Image (tube, rainbow, N blue to C red):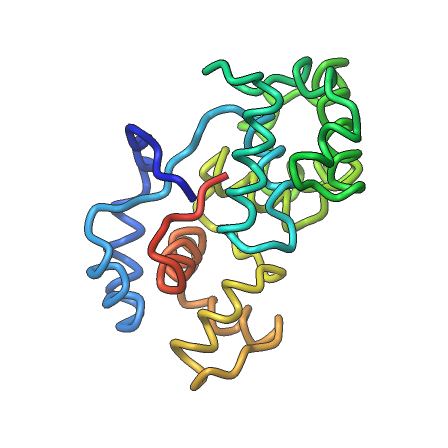
Length: 218
């Protein structure tokens, strides 16, 4: 996706993860060395992260960025302000669809905005909750499944050991680097990734980068 003007700081655990993954897996060691100081970072805004994750469901990184650019321009009316729930609620489904969103994604974004605005979701609680508890709370929201919740854990809460087994890019990269191009089953992927714990978020991030040098961001 479009690089940020200034990169956010990496998680405090990132250097340790790089070192331990490099020691545990020679394939990852090569990938990590190839990407230098590039690192995962958080945008810091829960609503934006979840909205971007919904936009990015089941489409490529490039397509998601194109739709997000149109969406953010429409919601913010060309001003440099951040995207807020109130601003999204002011958009009709037809206007959201005009940004390239499907009918369902437009409805999901409207529902997400309403939940934030009404206080049905309380992001201040989430940093103190474990991964599965956050996932359980998020998947009660319309349009948010486990994959979207895991993207939130990775890109907003910066949790270190998330393995999104529903992510097609991750499975494709695992097949490319370890299985002669054969995409693994979820069970095979989980077994392969055991050696990367407790840093499976970092391993996932580097595997994404091996497919697309432009960093994935939500």
